[in-house]
Length: 285
Image (tube, rainbow, N blue to C red; front, side, top):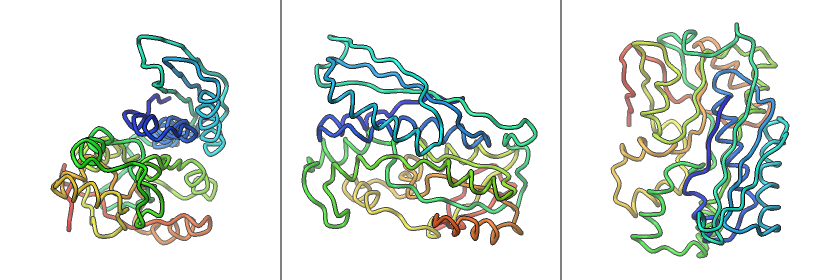
């Protein structure tokens, strides 16, 4: 089971007044975390707290949650909406949720199946997902005072629309690999804490990873954040997903087969590194 919220990405939604994708983020942050254990999501429930109940806004939020559940192939079996004046501003809200998944005990991925030399395959993110938005807002909106309504040619959309791009849900992709009996040794969802905090969670004791950060494309939003905030590149990998939202570990002999299986469903994938016997996250430029 897993539970999570969307964080301060909500502040962007308030500013842009766009609320139909935030629910996808709420679902994604839960189902992707459950997925890394090898479990397929079964059901999801949401909790929505609002300063004032605006039915049209609630409808948008719940639509996002429903869309996220469709993408996750799990049931939305209920939820709770609480109207809490004084606790929240009249136009503000918070959303969280939890999901339950199931996996055969023998197929549980808990780090014990990973071994040194396993190859790491990265699946691309859709941008910032739902992490690092306190830093994003400080750098881009508070300090640089960039306009969320301004159109950016490099994004082919406004800054606000780019920042509200929903978190990618990887359930169908991983289900395809499982159904084709691809032997996956471990998986990792790159969320808050970036590469340094999340990748070790998939490993066994005494293991680390070596990542070639030039082996995958970096979304332009991260370049904008890094340059605008004058943030060291290494620190960016300690906060954001930098273009890789999900990582799969497989045996070296299974790399080509896994990439071919991903190609069957038009899922881009990159060989980004390997598991090492040094207990560290080693980034190579």
